[in-house]
Every structure is written in C-alpha cells, then in structure tokens.
Amino acid sequence: MSFTLISAILRNPWYIDHEFVVSHAPIIGNLITKGPSRFPGNTSEDISKIPYTLSAASVAKVPGNIRDGYNYDHVPKQSKAVIPVKGVLLKEDQDDGCGYFVAGMNTLAKRIHDADMHDNIDAIILHFDSPGGTVDGTQALADAVKKTKKPTIAFVDGLLGSAAYFIASSCDRIIAENSSTLIGSIGTMMSLVDEQPYFEKLGFKIHNIVSDLSPDKNADYTSAQGGNYDPIKKNILNPFARIFQNYVKENRPNLSDSSIQGKVFLAEEALSRNLIDSIGPIESAIATIDELLSLPVNSTTKPKQIMENLPLLIDLLEVESLESTDEGTFFNQDQLLIIEERLATLDSAHSRLMESNEINLRLSGSLEKAENEIKSLEINVSELKSLPASHPASAASSSDRIPDASDTSIQSFENLSTNDAIAALRKGGF
Image (tube, rainbow, N blue to C red; front, side, top):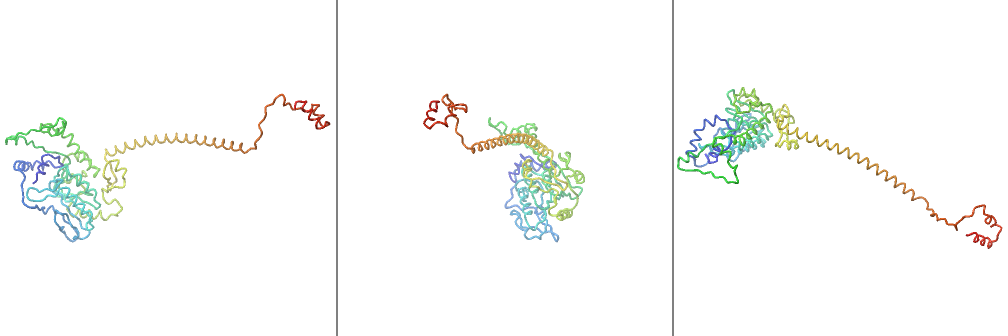
C-alpha cells in the first residue's frame, strides 16, 4: 500500500459510501500508525477483478499480461467484454496492501476503450461491486463510459455506491442482480485526520507557517481542524456534490432530488426511483444487450445516445456531448436557464438588427432616389450639349441703330448707285 493511497485517504474528497469508511476506520488507523505494508516483487490482480468475455458458447478468459492490457483477438466475434469495477476506486493503480494489484480508474478507462474498439466485441458489461472512490478520476472514467459506441450495461452484484453510481449512470442500462443489492449514496464527503497529537506524543512539534502573501492557503483545512467545517463544505464538498448530482441527472433525467442526497436504497426502491432499470441475474444483462443490438443501427438504440453533431449547443452548454434517451433529449434546470438567457440575448440582438435593417432600407430608398435624379440631370446636360451652337448676342449702342422700313433713306437705296448708297449709309451713321 503506497504513500499515495495514504495521502488520498487523509486528504482527498471522496465519492464513497459512509458505511464503508466507518467499517474500515480501524484499518486506516493501523495504516497510519504502522505505515504501509511492503510486498516484494510484482503484485498480481485478484482473479475476480480480471476482465473476461462472454460468448454464446463459453466464458473465455482474456489472454495476455494483466498490466499490459488485453488482447481480444482470440475470442469469438460478438463476444461481450465483462470488465469488473470492484472495491475502492482510485485514479491510479495501487496495491491493496495484501499483495494484489488494484486497477485504477485510468486503467479501467483504457480497458473500456480497448473493448469498445475491438471488432470481436459487440457490447460491454461493467460488473460493479464498489462503495465508490476518490473524486479525482471519477468523472473522467464516467465520460469514457459515456463515449462508448457499443451498448454498455452496468451489472451490480452487491453495492453500487457513490463514485461507482456516478460511473454506472453513463451506461445504457443499470441492472441489479437481486432485491438485496444496494444502490445510491450519491454525495461527497471527506475525513480529515488531525495527526498533530500523535506526533506531539512522540516528541514532535509541528509548526505550519503561511506566507503573509498567501492568507488563503490551507485556510479551509485549518478551519476544519479547529472544528469549523463550513468553509470546506462551501468551497470543496458542496461544489463537488453539485457536479455529481447534475451529472447523474443529465444521464437519468427522471431522478427526484430526494434520490440523490446520499441515501442508500435496496434494489426494489431504487427501481421505483429510476436509479436502476431492472433487477435480474447476469443473463438478463445479456438479454438486454441482445435487445439493444437487435434495434436498427440508425434508430435510438441506446437510451443515452451521444449527440456530437450539435457543436453550437454543446459549446453553449459547455459540455463534451449531449445525450438522448429513448424518451427524448432532456436538459437540467441550469442548462435550460443558459439556453433561455442566450435566446433572450439573441431576441434582443434580432430586434436591433430589424431596426437597423429598417434604417438601411430608408437610406437605401433615399440614395436610390438621389441617384435617379442625378441620372436625369446627366441626361438633360447631355441633350443640351448635342444642340447646334449659336453666336452670343452683342450689346446695343446708339450707333447700332437698325433702320426700320419707314426710313426714307433705306427706301431710296435701290435708286442710288453703289457709291451713292455707301455714302448715304455712312451719312446715316453706318
């Protein structure tokens, strides 16, 4: 058992069933006082936690080194991969203190991905018996389950508690083995151990000194050590609990608030509360898978189909993907408020756009009218330019008098010789 595990027990927030913590308190106390156990050589994985496959003919153990992954090449096509999810769930691989390797949630995610990608596997059964585990790693594993392309069934024999339920909620169906199966414990907790009295008894005096520039560093933990748990609830446990509740409500929209506040239910009540989908042995899980596989490929085969073809909505809600059950697509209250706010913003923007369009139309009409008037003037100018030119009028003076028809000198010009006529015109002022 590693130092990492001890640190996780003492410091990390957990999605775990409280009864498990209470029952294991003596072991934790012994671990703290005596330190971690050491086992020589490589540890092996308990056979009950080793993945295997189910086929129509037989149960086939998956060959290969358990630490190095799995090879499904030697199993029949249309086999079902069974991946145990048992015991306390931690992000990283550990040994359990008894010489056994325990697969962490990162390793479990890889096993699920490998099964989902292999051509010989047509469905995945996650075999649960777990009180939960650390917050760290839980959502990543649940997301890995959610992203599977093949039908995924959660089969529970024993306990599906806290982090284990978080993960199982991403499966297409949750099936409890029998009526004594326990489901629930949805919530967040942490146990802080004040180790100072123990070390002081051994002669150690611990001084925790915080920089003046870092007044908030470890403030929540310090308050908790002094008996004030409110800061650590407000800043750590409550936010994690909301994430947990929202996640499972997205996966199973019909859950009531009273079902996700930490209670543990027997299978019958869990079924009535929509925490699970049915009760029955492993054969019922196989039958459910066959039912899902028999549906048309293009139909909503999975009750939680992942919808990745709505990038704008996914980006708006800040989620990795959307899901749709066989009853439709559902949103939680927070998501609906986000959508409502965005629609209100878009409606306001649309109104402003319409007003802008009206102004643009009016300006466009005025501009068109002005352009027509300019064209008309240009035509008139062009027509005027095409007319023949005329001499400009001269200014009249007293010497420019034009004789009228009554002028006797003009009437007698025709009887005069040329020289006399010229002389007469000059005499008349011409």
